[in-house]
Amino acid sequence: MKRISQRDIARQLGVNVSTVSRALRGLDGVSPELKKEIERIAHEGGYRPNPFAVSLRYDTTRMIGIVVPDITFNHYSQIVKRIEAEARNAGYVCIITDTNDTAENEINCVELLTNMHVEGIIVCPSQDTTDFSHLLRLRQAKVPVVLFDRAPDISISSVIINDAASARQATFTLLDGGARRIAFLGGSNQLKQTTDRKHGYLEALRERNIAIRTELVKCHHISFNSGLTDTLELMSLPEPPDAILATHGLLAISALQAVTSQGLRIPDDVAIIGYMSDWVSEMSHPRVSFVKQNLREIAAKAFRLLLDQMQGDDSVQHVVVNARVELRNSTK
Image (cartoon, rainbow, N blue to C red; front, side):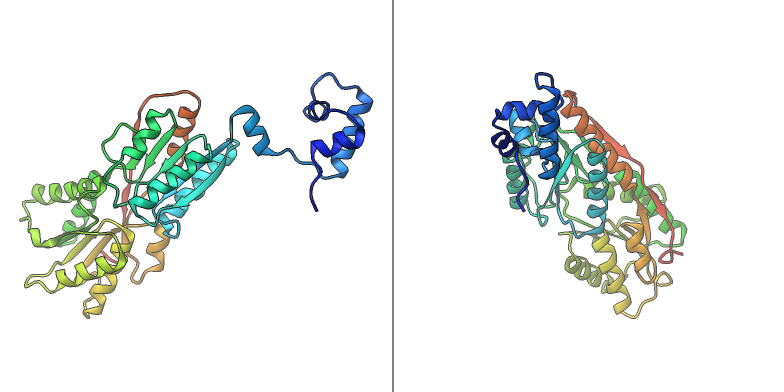
């Protein structure tokens, strides 16, 4: 059944729509008797304010956009869930878009959200994005925008984890477990996230005087198949790795499967540490030691930066959230 509108109420009582609007908003200029009658009809007819009409009238939509590479991936779905909770508490509605981790879809998602007049956008760039002009145009147009998880060196506020430091700690953990041939399984080198984590990995090897072997470093597209292929190539080397640091959950799980498919034992033959959520780690067998990221803090800080911009703060801020290694069964 169609809900009653202000126009319906006005027509039924023979008054102007503006009179109904004033009465329902509790403004002066309407007699108590007429106000009571308007409220009665509105209640019985199931009247609800139209938020889109309000947004047009006051040029505010109370909506924000979120752009993620893959909403089905637990890492992103958990962050989106927490951003949505923060936004709802502040009176905002979220429109969530998925780029399928491609630059073309990312541009389309940003354009769609802009055309819907969202008040701000939170973005995790795709792994294929190398030209960030579409995001910089938002900034130039005074549209509040915040990046998270993957953030290039551009003049847009961002929230990331301590990528280099956490990879350094993870590498030290593998070295302390006796590993000496640690492979690095990462995304494309065009991702700053990949280069920062690789920097931490290399830094740890240098500090322990472990020879750096370029054949143990694999940086390609982030996907299960890519991780599987790269790990199988690593295990076929004359001197295969005795440990793997995987910088993405998909890469960690594919490495786990590739290693066990060769009849090798984890962690006795090959130890593994991955960047993943605790939920995914608990579901794996054996449970994978992982770099634990505070997704709640990432989400809260990303929304806070966006809210500050929507309230007039024009500064660019880069926030780093600490992550730490959590030991499970895939390390000695």
